[in-house]
Image (tube, rainbow, N blue to C red):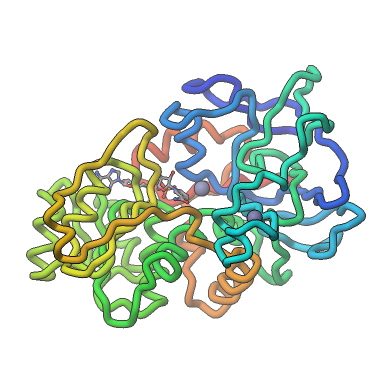
Length: 362
Ligand SMILES: NC(=O)c1ccc[n+]([C@@H]2O[C@H](COP(=O)([O-])OP(=O)(O)OC[C@H]3O[C@@H](n4cnc5c(N)ncnc54)[C@H](O)[C@@H]3O)[C@@H](O)[C@H]2O)c1
Ligand SMILES: [Zn+2]
Ligand SMILES: [Zn+2]
């Protein structure tokens, strides 16, 4: 099958022929229909996070089940599914206390002695990335890394739920527990930030301030529920938020992954407010906070994959899209072919687009 492979960090992905194994007892073989290009893929390509090479990137996808292993009960051939990198074992402390997105037992991967799920065309090593490797015509994954959805849901938009939407909406409704009438600021309005705005709007936030560095996002953020837009290039966004709100916001979200954005998220809080670091701050970078601010009971917390319980969340998000609450049509800036994935990375660096979605030939 055709796949986009990271052979070396900071080099373009290479389209290669990759071999895929057959499903083991708890595995599912999926024909990939659509895969979104998320900034996290770029972080592993550009070296801000360490990556195993070679590997097939991609982790935001939807497709159709082709074959399941003998023990699989959750999905069946023909099902439409959304994948999730938060593969969970189901029996560790994190899973059993309802924090399955934190599961780290790794039991959902194949063991060292087993035949790998993916093999390079020349029979060399090919790593599976984030339990999925979606930039490929097929995926072979654990059954606890996908969930089936209703068949009237368009799969290109379903793919977005696979990472960006679950991350952004989940950060607002699960991680920060936004309540009706509260104030929210979202720094960085790519796929994840737009979803955080949308999640806050669904939760009933009163004022939602969207912050980006390109005016190209000024109108788009309103579609997702933002009430205000700030261009961070027009001056310190913390000062602008303080001028608008007088006291600061209840919830802020760094949806970029920059030291400065995480610090700004904390500094724009009102007393008792919560800052959420959703963006992936490069490995090795520290963030600095004014210690005295903690006397105002200000909080800062990490956020991974929207603290999801994805087999519950994702079908709900699908329903929210189908009844008009969740905005996904406007999140797709471009539909592209697998061969154009490097172009999507270049466009992402400009900040002008929301999401590129790779469509696989049916
Ligand atoms: N925590 C998680 O579970 C999780 C999951 C998915 C993605 N992420 C991370 O979230 C971040 C966002 O992902 P994305 O796919 O939406 O990225 P993206 O590149 O599509 O969007 C980033 C946005 O930030 C804007 N921006 C850049 N610098 C800015 C600044 N100084 N001030 C304000 N805005 C600025 C850009 O213009 C762009 O609109 C990435 O770091 C990604 O790796 C985290
Ligand atoms: Zn992602
Ligand atoms: Zn677990």
